Length: 197
Image (cartoon, rainbow, N blue to C red; front, side, top):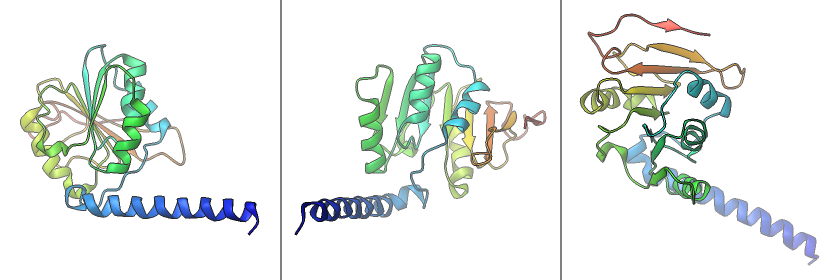
């Protein structure tokens, strides 16, 4: 068999194995994620959110379901904040750990964020499915301190009022970005929504 053919079969075989591992990782974490799959957030969306969310060095940004850690890396680089990410998908966790290895101020944990106390977070970032957003709102309302901010990509937190709703200047990545503040965004505290397009 020609060498070039062996190389092609090796590449196709490796791609197939990676796809199978990816599918198994999704199935394994389904009870926790309820179907939410690891997907990278567009850099233009991250930039849009960070533009609207100035942070001070030393503040703590927590990304629940951090995927490959790109939000953590961008926030750390831009603002010098401390970053903590939670990820239960083993492939996404491995990728995040690899991409953040050796970077001070970024901690990636292979752990279910539902079991973590988020009380120390100044900013919580999420990109989760609508099925869990109500439960998430209850957790965040109970744990976050006054002044904490929450950024939710694509899906709102039911019953909460966004302080602003943003859209990235991109046709491909133009889904809404909701920004909340504790306690003003909580039910019974809202003063209205400002929308910036």
